[in-house]
Amino acid sequence: MELKIQTLTQEQANTQAIALSKNQVKGQIRKPVRAIIFFAHGSRDPLWRLPIEAIAQRAQALDPAALVRCAYLELTPPALPLVAAELAALGVTQFTILPLFLGVGKHAREDLPTLLAAIRQNHPEADFKLLPSIGEDPRLVDLAARLAVFPAVSSSVGA
Image (cartoon, rainbow, N blue to C red):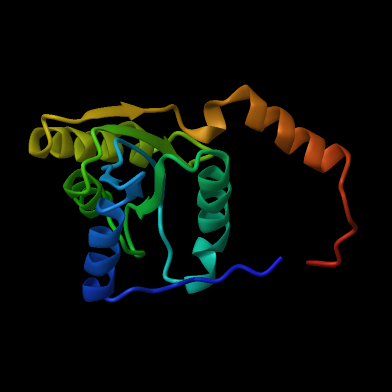
């Protein structure tokens, strides 16, 4: 499976946002009301974001009515406040944020709630639902265990 990363200039992002805001349904303009944001740490390595974007693409396929975005804490754009502002400008009023952290360290316990408090102040008309970090979900814990016990393919990485 090949993933394509599209890096947009600010002008391209604005054009895309305007196009999305004019989403036509039976001749009437319909603004999106729901968004899902996958929030991750970030990295200097541009390939690091591929799995994050793959998750977002899958979520978009599962819920085509929602706007799905990725946001990052540091080192990788775009930042969470910028994504929230973009989506709010498109008419989104319901946000679901899923932190993609396996461990619940300082970023998930302190940094994200602080960021979210500021975002809520800037967008009081919107409802922001912060889900637990993925590492806290027993389904992911079970899946990770199954991946180790029942590997799909052999790998020679590190051998």
